[in-house]
Length: 383
Image (cartoon, rainbow, N blue to C red; front, side):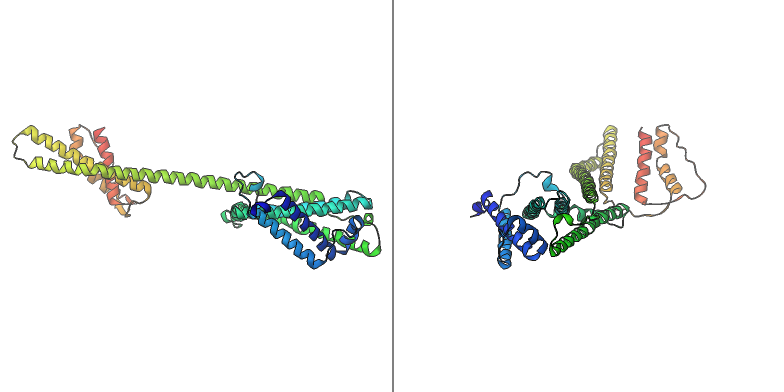
């Protein structure tokens, strides 16, 4: 059954039935349309209004159902990525252009009737193509992701300068396309009704002030604005993706450092414990005592470095605990310098401190500040 409904022949028959029903509905509700179309096709394609509505609804539902049960498109071309809100406006503009073209293209009555019928066909095809595309996007769950304007205003609300500018441009173009142009078309239809009541001919309809160039300019401007909107959204998406990749990389690096540090700390703890046992042995040997002292100092230094590495990884991940307090930098610097006097003397180095003679108050974490200064002094001694 589903294969039959997806058949191009069945879809064509369904669309043709819906078109015949739509022609009957419009003829029953518009005396001017019925007057002009009757001169071209007579009483053909005409049925009672109730039957026409039932046939039109049944044909439309059946056509959209055949679209719904068809397979999803594996590749999406540029047309299927067009903003869905823009698709709702462009068919409307196309219909307005068809009306204007039929009105001013030819002056002969018979030519006008032919173009009026072609306008009806074009309007119906445009409307059904729009409904088919929207149905396919809903089926493929792509409608929300192709509504670019709502997404744009969520990212750049009208309270921001770029959001306000885009909102004003969008509102102005939509006013021209959806209000200004249709009002002039309604004036044209009113003139058609007047002609029908006075038994005049089509060519006597007065010219209206509607500008096709303005309609085309607004349509192209709206398309350009939509392109700019999608371009800004794509830039934001790429920025967010790059930011997420950077955060993921930093998190992986921090986790790697943490795991490696834990793995190193386990054997290091055993080394420190065994060095302590060696120092406790009653070995009367100066060389042995010297070596154990070196092992003790180096293992303690390595433990400190590993702790610093862990702290650095926490700082990079933003999870380092910091307790800020008011400290005297000159006092802390002098205290730590005093702890390194022996090491500087051993290396025949002279530490020069410039005491400002007054407290240098800063806001910092005492432990982290001391560790940073100790690392600076250690690098100075060892290098």
